Length: 129
Image (cartoon, rainbow, N blue to C red):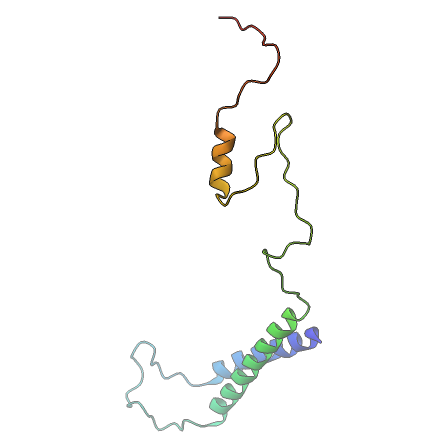
């Protein structure tokens, strides 16, 4: 279905480019070329103008349809909804797990990790000076 809409969309693009290039230029972009006022002798609702409007509307519709078709297969996800199982936090070997979070967040956890640690119990190895 999506491939069919893409092919139709591309055909509309080519037709729209062709119809726009067939229209007569009035040179209004730079302020040159048109000696008439706002309305010229050319009718505003001729065949090329209507064809351009119809092709532009169809281009808009196919663009919306393609975006809807592209989003149909996706399931909404959220970073707040976990997979059901909390991920265990791994701590370095030999350290104890920090106490339960008391509402301080990451800042308190970092402060606890950088706090000086007490020497391990047991006999101490003499250090050289």
